[in-house]
Structures are given as structure tokens and as C-alpha cells.
Length: 354
Image 1: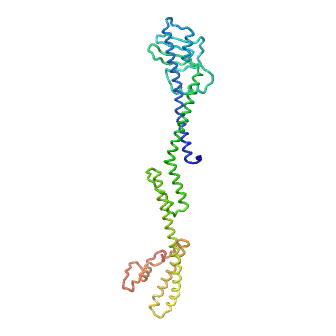
Image 2 (image 1 turned 90 degrees about the horizontal axis):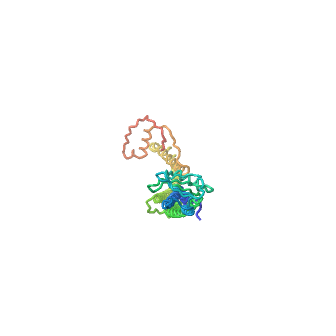
């Protein structure tokens, strides 16, 4: 049993619905055409029946033969109106009055459809006067008086046959469309959905990445794009795991390095009291460098726990910073001269340690 909320069930129901709508749209003009054909056949049969009057030497027929001819036609009266104004008539002994006149000399599809539904949904047995053109040169029109009940019975029989045929066609079409969509659309979509759910359980498992097919339609594109997306996510998760492990290692190194630098800082504090002038000159810079190294280790540890540290913005002389960097690089010892064109009074606003 297919769940009603599934895509397959919805496609099946929609297919049956649209086929039935199409059959209804075909049914309406078909019934109208059936009614028109019924009248045309009665007019043609009535025209043939009047030929017996032309063959009679007296131009008349006895009532028994007339009733038999009318029974064959299915009419209560027949009239053949000639172009010269004369008419040949056949009728029962007491012909009834017509309840409605139907003129086929000027056919109208809308009137035919409306008349068809009036006959189908009507009750009782109205007498219809049907007027239509004759197919011979010497006749103008043919008229017949018909009972509506036999016509209604045949129209209902025709409608039931159309309904049965529509049901068979709709079920057959729905089955074929269902199987086609099941194979071309639903099964691949289920495979994609299953792959997404399976990949969600363990994104780092490479075996859960969907295998891209060779289809060139939209489903094939979706499969290939999903495979690329899953592989990208898997690699990103693997890279994140490696970065996490690297961050843990860096944190440990920074922790140990900060302890070492703290010890060195304590040692260098005693250099400021040295009697050697050169030592006293270098000691402040060495202490400052150790302080910056300790601060860098501290910022690294803070970043690993809380994220990027906020900038510490201040104003300072850019020339002094350039000179300090040059000394820190050791260019003064190897004879390298740094020629800076920065004005000594130039002040900048930035994070000096960054």
C-alpha cells in the first residue's frame, strides 16, 4: 500500500484526476454529437420511408403499412417538404403535438450541448419535432416526430460506455505514468534522500558519499552535485579535526614556552643592575622582546579558548618602531644600515604589538 503522503501516491492521484477531466471534456461534445447523429439517422430513415408514398399509384398507404414504416423509423409522423410546395406525410392515426422543435438546418454546437444535457437530465417523454435538410434535389426539408424517451435511453447507454472506457483508459494511463515516474523520478529521489540521511549520521565516513550516476538530466546533475557537496563537507570536517589537533598541540607548546619565557624574564631583570654599560643598554630591549613573546603566547592561548583578542590601539612614533624592529633583527651587529625616511615626529594609531 503506497502512503497517500508519498510522491508516488500524489502522482498517481493527479494522473487519474487529469485523465478523468480530459475524458469529461471529451464526453460533453461526444454526447452532443451522438444526439445529432441519432436525429440525422431518423431523418434519413424517414426520407426513405416516404419513398413508399411515391411508389404508390394513389399516393397513399393504408394505416397498417404506415404504422409499420413509422415503427421502423421510430417516429410518430414523417413529412417530406418538396421544393414545389407539396409534401409527403406519414403519421399515426392521432399524431401528438410537438413539445419542442429542433432545427438541424442551422446547426449550433452550444445549442446541441445544452439540448443534450436537457435530454439526459430530463424526465417524462416529450415529443420532439426534428427538422433537417434533405439529401435529394427535389426535396427541401424532412420532418419527423420522435419520442424523447428512446433517445434518452440510448444516450444514457452511450454515456455509461464512455464512462467505462474512460475509467479503463485512466487506470491504464495512470499505471503507465506511475511506473514511468517511479523509475525515472521517484526511485532516484529516494536514493538521493537515503544518501543524505545516511551521510548525516557520519559525515566523515567516505563510504557514505553518494555514487554519482551517468544520467544527463536534472536527476543526474543533482546526484553529481550532491556527491561534490558531501565530499567537500567530509574534507572540511577532516580538516577541522586536524586543525583542532594542531591547535591543541600549539596550545601545549605555547603554555610551555610561556613558562620558559617567564623564567628568562626573571633572569633578565638582574641584567639591568649590571655594571657593564653595554649590558645595561641591551637589557631593556631584551626585556621588552621577552615581554612581547610572553604576550604573544598569552594571546595564542586566549585565542585557542575564546577566539581572536581585541586590538589594543594606541598612538606611537612609527620611526621608533622601525628602529626597534631593525635592532631586533640584528642588523646593527653585521654592519647593515637601515635608511629610514620616516619623519621622527610621525605618529600612527594602531596596535603596536600587532
